[in-house]
Image 1 (cartoon, rainbow, N blue to C red):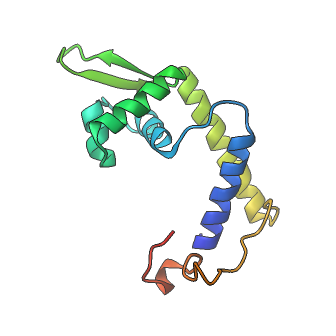
Image 2 (tube, rainbow, N blue to C red):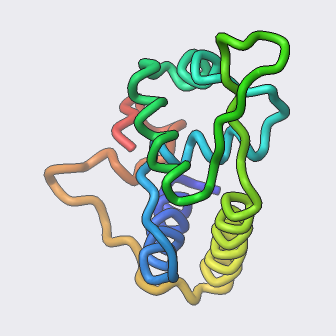
Length: 141
């Protein structure tokens, strides 16, 4: 997949996501939910912060939001009572299943040339945005 196709897919997935029922997650919340759901644990705030190269307060704020939505939970670590483990919930897994379905649907539509809108040629202000990585030393995207 080239950069233009990847960005078109992302655009369509995000458009479908904001139209879907349910809360909008920010990128940080999404990254954390994906990590705790798709990668084997145990997951801790400290481990998530290190893996995502974020501060622990930023991870804690994102987890507060995910917990408020019922997408994640923090439970005491039985082996170390000073630590808490982070887990996704059934509701969080269901939200990710919906996201996965949207990615598949949008990818199929893009492959069939039915994407909601095609990317426009690069503008003067962003000339390297759609260039492929092999043709561009800039990683603006």
